[in-house]
Image 1 (cartoon, each protein chain N blue to C red):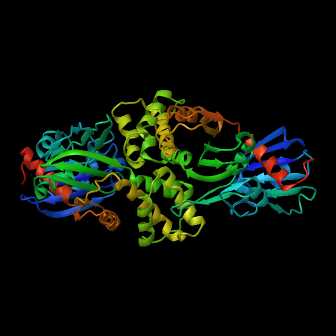
Image 2: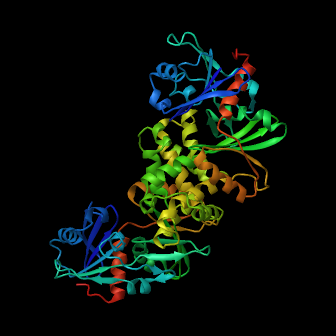
Image 3: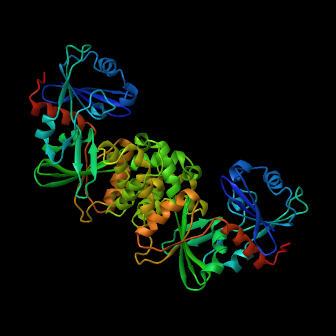
Length: 294
Length: 294
């Protein structure tokens, strides 16, 4: 089968053998935004030369702005509920393919507030057979970070932190960005940001320290970006249990070290999983759904 | 004398009689950013036809990016310390004027973090004679909101919340803004944002509710901007004492009702002061410094 993780700004395609092993992988910048109105052509191009029949897709491709909207499945949900929520779509262009889109997940918290994800649930499906029974925490870092609680193989609850997006808009469009000088990740500046997030006070006040640390030369201008990053990630992790439970981390390469550092400093043991878990997850879902794998 | 509140994006000029009463006022969009490199010409234009000798200025005009950098005065500070921090500047263009710039204020919190203001301290100087002895709280709403504690006529402590700027960058540059429809201030949406800010959890998580409230039609798209505003102002006010002390509020017209609502809902009694307090403050500082008023 072919597994496709089709997000807002990029697409990753995996060719899997019948046992679910990745035998080829491709990447494209034709995310959902760039593919709008021409999803079939983009997909045809991406899978060219791969002759597997089943194409299972996950991510924003199933959103209202995607190819075909697939309803969210409500938490708690495991492999079975998510596989049942998959929808088959027809395409006159890709006649010799069998096209499926996985659903996203939704949750309603005790306070009545909704949360949603599309794509991350598939990554967790790729982890479930490694996690085993009991209660587990997972952190999926990125533009919108997801924190999940998984109980006995089912996603029980999750929440979203807009860490990555907040970092981008503040760096690029706020007064804080004006003081920052470009530079590589600055480890002491990042650690200082984490420490700052642990102080009393709200993020909306803490942010101003990026400016005053620059004004008063507390940190060099080249360390302010990393300070902001540490500050935001530190606030994101404030909600984790204080008891040092281990955390399963899935992160893009640039965020792997920062998140590992941040979680470790809070006393968590970090178990890192590679980003190919999304291919594993789509395989697990397709098998659960009984789709042909050859 | 002439009093000038010269901020980043705009300038307000007041002509005062010898008793400190405002007898004329002008406004210009030639803020510090727009005036860079030609401060004398902008000032000459703004005060044309007003023949008072002393021109006292406050705000970002005294910053590194302004006309002439004037060192911050450290808190705690009252009228006397701030007046002593004023600096006279020379101008070959404006020979018949006596030009003064007021300093900003700085503070170092117990945790070693600096905070700064430029301009707001002058507004407080215009309030001091109304406040009297004892301990007072003041909230100055705007792009960077300032919360101050004033003890017996001296500014003891303050902190900055980036509420206005965060609202702007998130509305204009984040995924949250894409769901928002333009519309007038929405009172129920704003109240819902305030309530949301009072829930457990960090701002970095709460923000995502702007999106899910839109996705799940919890709020109409035209109410999401006001929800975000209430969420941010609610987080800003989390740091205020829970005991319902009265708060002195200075806010631009568009923020007067939202802040009054937010403070009242938290149990504070609100005392509103008009924005002309900056002219009163510059007058009080000039008199303290012994400058000629005619």
